Image: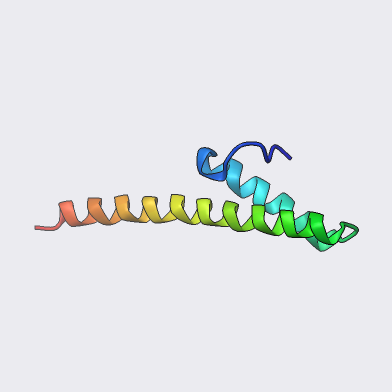
Length: 70
């Protein structure tokens, strides 16, 4: 996993895919506590980045709808 890139520098798709991989790894187990904590923190940052993308898309859609209203 390319976790050397800050989550806010990733596209939505890249951040989501990394988040899926983090969840898979955590669910599979077999990691140390330190590794699990690092994965959890990375997952939180990725989830925040994804939510930012979704919020931005929602805002743009709302603006388009508002602009089309008479």
